[in-house]
Length: 235
Image (tube, rainbow, N blue to C red; front, side):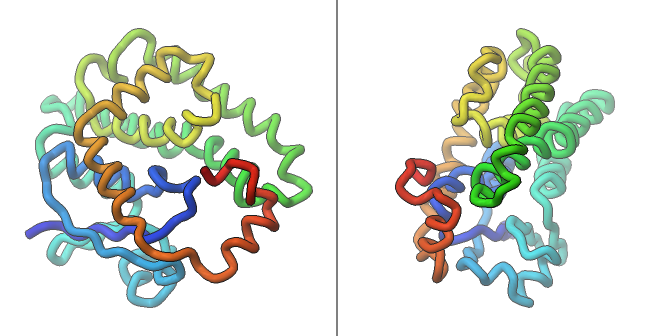
């Protein structure tokens, strides 16, 4: 039985390649597990059928028989735990890989998402611009620490790619195009190694190919209200 994941059939250009079903797709591609996709139009994720899968009205979700999961980190760990290839064989190695999944989601990603909120979703609000210096400082604090820990290693725990690397690379990609990694050569190379993996390329291509829907009513007006239209942020 192939698992079924949920994904959006349309998102704005700035979100393409970043929606969190990509993390699940990547994990499934790494372990060689075929899957099906249930595509949702914008707004459908807030309806009762999808909230039965995901109480917060988000994607992705994962269904396999009677098992229904939400949260990309939980799904990736389930895939890693039930297939070979994303967790080391030793008990200690598995524990460290899982540790890095939580570090990516709980320590590195929050300030990065604060930046996305300030520069995209609340860009037009009066408090957004004054917050940016503090947000950027927190991001660089985490990147400094991560860079020091990674050092010259290929992956976080040495030569073996794990679920922890999959999740950390996914998080770092959010700001890789904004210049945040420019001062961290080892982190930039780390992200490039992750993106060079064939499983990542397949996952990204599949996600991008699924965006065949139409924007929700009023989206162009929202862009203009945020000061985004025509300034290159959507390209």
